[in-house]
Image 1 (cartoon, rainbow, N blue to C red):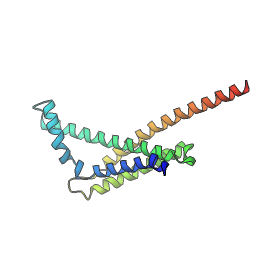
Image 2: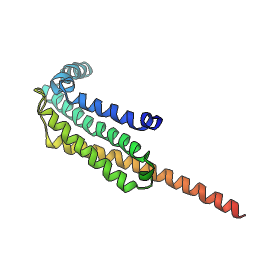
Image 3: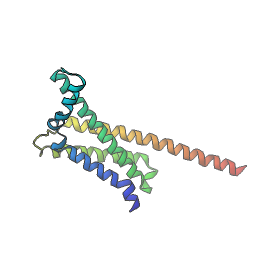
Image 4: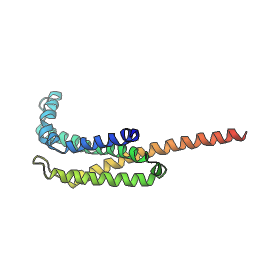
Length: 161
């Protein structure tokens, strides 16, 4: 149970956050009500086209970021399974596939939300974000593995002396 709370519960909570984000709560109409006044406060007289471009960039960066976090949490949870801990390529592939499936299902969910529009481009952005997250996770895992291997090697050398 402790392992579930530590590794899997944060992942499930983040999946819920992403799901809530694909409702009307974080639609472009709703978020622009808050971001537009903030942008106009920063720079009064900003053109509507510039504001729209900024909104689009922020929203697309959010796709990448939320799926990078999802991939890192999934990577962490998968690596907590002893049989997958040593198999980085399987964890990587499973994580990427799971994130891609969730991204596609999330966009499908948006077909039922009146203020949202599903997009294949968003799925591709989500998968790109997941790939970034998994590459970060793999680089940290590889660095940790090298440190552990180096420490074990130095202990072996000390034991021989």
